[in-house]
Amino acid sequence: MSRRTGDGAGPPAAGRRRGWAAPEPPEGGSAAPEPEPDHESVARAVVLRLLTGAPRSRAQLEQALAKRDVPEGVAARVLDRFTDVGLVDDEEYARTLVRSRHRERGLSRRALGTELRRKGIDDETAAAALEEVDGDDEVHAARELVAKKLRTTASLATDVRVRRTYAALARKGYPPGLVGGLVREALAAEGADDEGPAWSDAES
Image (cartoon, rainbow, N blue to C red; front, side, top):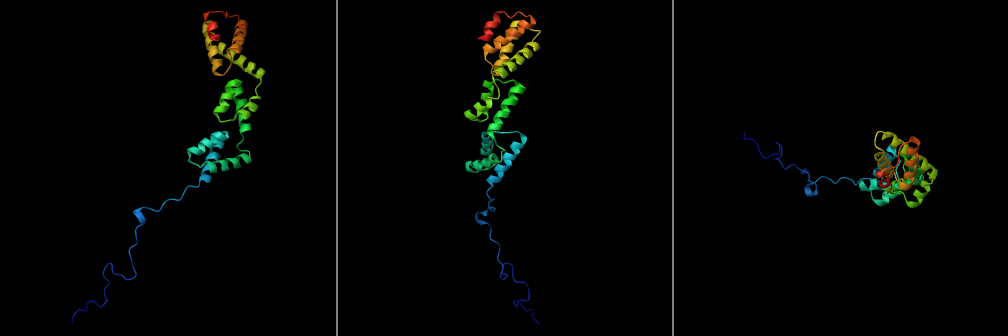
């Protein structure tokens, strides 16, 4: 008996299966695009992380969000909410900075004002914060800085001590007139000769 062929008993030829079709590749041959990032969630996470590390001004937080490509509108909305709950407060931030920098580093009002501007604090808020330090506070801090500098340079010549003391206090924003009077006072108290060729140069 001859072998029957073409009676459908065997498997259909490859590629001829009824109801089957090869899947079409994605259009353009690329993977499906990733979803757009949730800018608001990113903004909240960035702000919380920064505030956990240390207090920040609103301007500093705005700069951080801009670096993360958070749209300005989203950044403003998120920062407004943090401000409403008291986690972002430029007035309190400025007052705290003034008190700590003056107490720990002996910075003058002038130097403190410069630092506040660098942190993005507006002039009105900065002026109010600087009231935390008055003239007597400045003189007291400057006197302590002068005494410390003269003490650490006691082994040097008087003119060298004077120059270094002026330079140290100038970096903290104190005017030469105030420093000069305090240096003379301190040198007189220790019986040192405050006259020398470098004295007038240091005051100029």
